[in-house]
Image 1 (cartoon, rainbow, N blue to C red):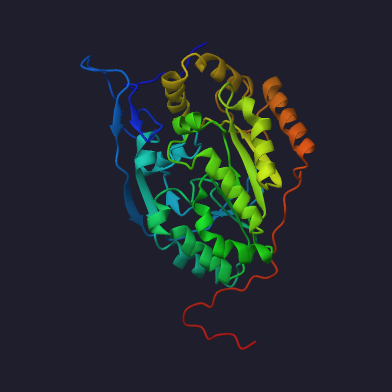
Image 2: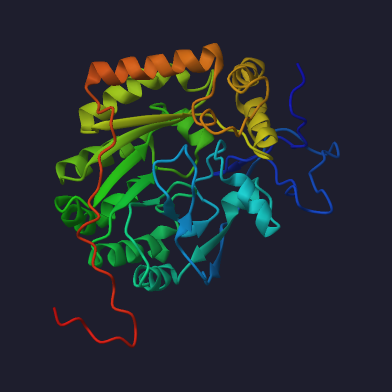
Length: 361
């Protein structure tokens, strides 16, 4: 079995998951590191985070994918400092002329005018409200949000307009915004899903180095639920031979903390992510790489990725079928809802467009 070719020097950088920074697929020239024999092997290096302001022309992204339960989303940031090695959004950095590897974790773009643009788009005469998903690509509560506060400003617009929103995150920073989320929840306008990939803090530090520790995510579920915010747990992604043994344990702990819905996604490895993930496995779990990639292929029609609608989230084949049955059995045993909660759209009040008079009635 041929494994993806890797060019990494096998250097683990403190707080980063990707081991290399190879050029994206659209670049005319390919760049990668080579060991010159003067000190290869595992090294610990610090890599700073650079944030570039970006003025967005539009902020609501539309989709018509049959695999998704929403048709619109918002991404306050490009790139993600959480650095999850398995993140399917990594290849999007290639569109910026940057690497899906370390660049994705360290060279970030902040849409500082997101709230302003959102208010304008919600005020459009032909706008019709439906749930907006946030956190489906990059995490809106990644560490730089503490300073940028873009997500908080976006929530402010949605709250004032009484617009429904569904949030996915790996960060307990979401608790900062309970003062906005709790009142929205009382009106049926918000739900939150915490992604919990493992209960093992050592594994979490390796594969999602700057995301909140597992125990903090579980605590966030508890505090959100206690505040009346409908909360779900996402076991995503499920990685063969790495975290697949934890499905039942994660669901049990999350349910005990107050989660009342659950979902899962099988590992997806589009474009450059194939090589990046293989490098990570080779560095951290060399004894598991062959089996892990073989199981991925078995659930993707013999390939490392299959983008076919209807199967890309859950995969196919015996292994994927077994994962699905385990998940369903655990959800049924725990009483986690099988159906997704619907949010209200009938309370929407369009923002007043600049230059217009306020409504009298």
